[in-house]
Image 1 (cartoon, rainbow, N blue to C red):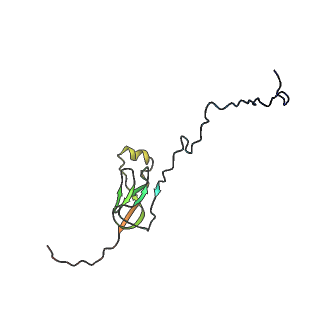
Image 2 (image 1 turned 30 degrees about the vertical axis):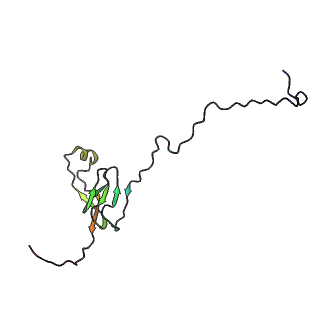
Length: 138
């Protein structure tokens, strides 16, 4: 084999170089790897004392942390929503669970003699205006 030097290269000969390219692409990174799903942002949507309109979501939950009270609906996925316009009140009230249910026995085991309190969302309607006149009484 002859060594490449400047003396052995001729002017009319091109300089040949070989470049080896990658045969496979590298794996790109992803923002959300397996086992790290996007957060669902569950919890309170409206604080105590705020005014809400009908249909406003008050809280989202996976398990029943919060319970519906006065003028509050309970969605299929556990969402609490306002059924009327009004002011939101969050209260902590004692409950009397039905101890015959297995779910109650499993979740409240050892608490039969204790008072169990839960958070309830209530919507108190705004005061109605008194602008109507009685036209006819039936």
